[in-house]
Image (cartoon, rainbow, N blue to C red; front, side, top):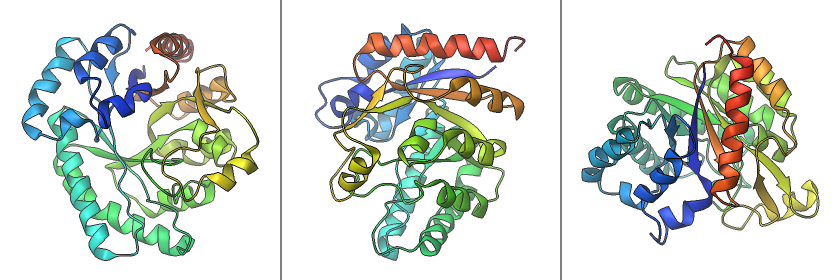
Length: 296
C-alpha cells in the first residue's frame, strides 16, 4: 500500500527564509495528521549545518515518522558550464543530506526555461547533468526523481521541462535503475496539459507522487503565461487548494497507478490555508488509498 507524507507548503518562508518557525514545530503539526512521513526541502535553514542532520532525523523518527523524500531544485539548463558544475556539487550535497536522513528519493529538476534555450539543447544539458549524479546517488542508496515541475519558489523562469512533450523527452533520455518520475497532476494542468494523459505516458516510470490540487484565484491560464516569466517565485494568481476540491480526478489517477503496481510514497502539497486544510487533504488521500489498495 502506498504511504503518505506531508510537505510544509504553508511554512516555506518561515522555515527557509526568516526562521520564524522551527522544524520541531512542523514535525509536531505533521505528527497529528496520521501520515507516515514528512517530505523535506533542502533549503530548510536548520539543514544548512550537516551536524544537525542526525538529531533532526532522530526527532522525526521518535514521532513514528519517516523522511522518504527530499525536495530540491537544481538548475541544470544554465548555459555556463561552471554554473552547472556548481549545481552538480549542490545536488551531490543534497543526495548526502537525503541519505543521512534515511531518505530513499531525492528530486532533480531540469532547470529554468531560459528564453535562448532550444528544446534539444535543454534536454541534453539536463540529461547529462542527471547522468553525472546517478552513480553517486546509487552508491548512497538514493533514487533520483524528476518532477513535472512548474517553478521553484525562488526561480525567475518556469521549469524548462514543464510541458508534457519536453518532460517526456527528458524522461526518455535518462535510462537508469536509480532514476524515476515524481508525478504531480496539478503541475500538468498548469502547463496546459492533460494530467491523465501525462500520467499514462510515464506511469511505468513513476516512483513517487506529489498530491495537490490547484486553482486560479482570478483570470485565465493565458494571464498566467504572461506573468510567469521574469519574476521570482509563483505567479500571484496561482493557488494550491484542498485535495479533492480542485480540478484533478484522483479516481483516474489512482486507477492508473494501481494498474502499473505503484506502491510508494505520496506527498501532500497542501495546507496553504492552515493545518486544518492539510488535515482534510490527508484524510481524503488516506480514504482513496484504502479504496484502491484494499488488500495491501
